[in-house]
Image 1 (cartoon, rainbow, N blue to C red):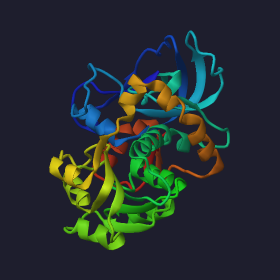
Image 2 (tube, rainbow, N blue to C red):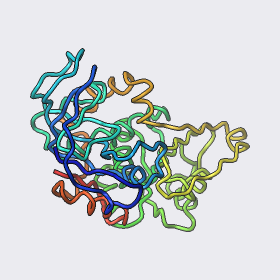
Image 3 (spheres, rainbow, N blue to C red):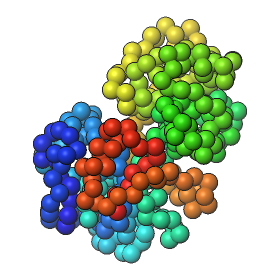
Image 4 (cartoon, rainbow, N blue to C red):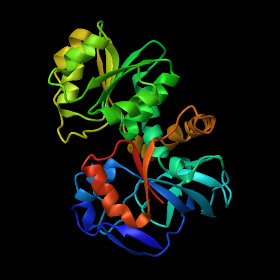
Length: 321
């Protein structure tokens, strides 16, 4: 099979497109013949050696795919060969075939394009887990950093499904349009030197929840407007800077700071994630949520697609077919 291999830590253009043996589904796993794969920021960190974990070299990156099941591992009775599915995979998605634990596989309606299905598992799984961690409910005011990104835009849609109000933090007009299409109520510039003041203008009494995949200055500025009893959920550090937290603020304002790790939850408590898929897949089929795919590229464009993401030239999702 074809695969995009990482043979040394570095840039997207150091990936090698070549052949590898087909994977073998183990117990509790399925083999998926890949029709499309989503391109994610986490893959950039992974191939550079800056992700939370470092797989042994060489390896195949790629974390979410869509396709059809072609083989079943021992003990799998919840799927059949030929099922149209999407899946989150720890590694291996940039290939013609991949194996995935059945708990991380979602049956997808035939009406959903493969490009949308491939941009679905990681972003919406991460978003749903984060909103659940924060206990987002009707009437909450939620600030979302990186709101036009894969996880950010999914957070907007799912927060609106919970009847929350959303303040979207975006860097330009193209990304504001994505956030607006997802249903955000208010918009602030993430490049503002007075971010907390801008958020305060939209939410004079403060906000209930902050969803932060950005870190750095965004975390520190947005925390200034978190009200009594508020919750901040940390998803990552897309800015490249890990912020510090003053614990006295949590104490004085009765606040909570929470981490939300989708990948680790898949590994440590897979049923928590598996239980979310039917509802999310139903919302996708009903059109209540929709991945914003802005670029569809052939599989051979993998290095260029990752470079586009690295250069922040993308408003929406990139999918390889």
